[in-house]
Length: 135
Image (cartoon, rainbow, N blue to C red; front, side, top):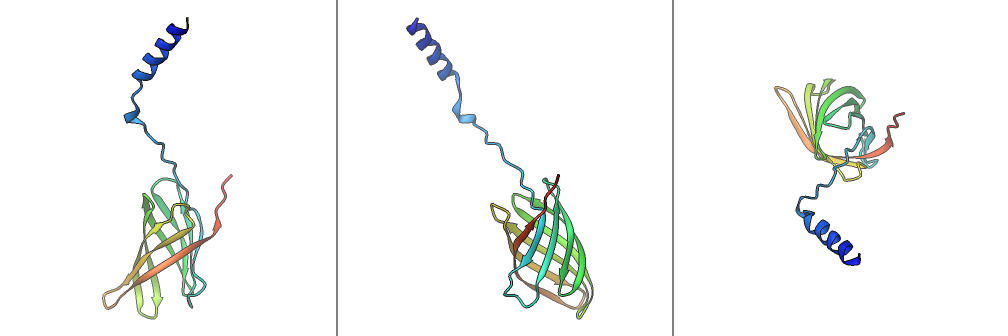
């Protein structure tokens, strides 16, 4: 009887293919409030709503100017687009090209603001200050 169980166990083990192990990728939800570091003179706040897939949207506040943004996220890389109206440089179109860290606690990258006369770009870093809670 033990020989039969041993043979059945060996047949079962030899039939398994370990080369095709697929790890399930967990979807992250990056929804929440992100702020630039407190060392900046101008605090920039983003309220991000993420659908858990590719779409991001939300509102922001940049140097006292409120704006809406839309964006996408794929493999922790996010691209946000927005418009700033009535700035000291006039109306500007903007993008933030950035990456979330593994835990979604930080967002870092660069921004570009442009209109027909000006291009302003720099690095930018955000930290999560409040996670959105869904019921």
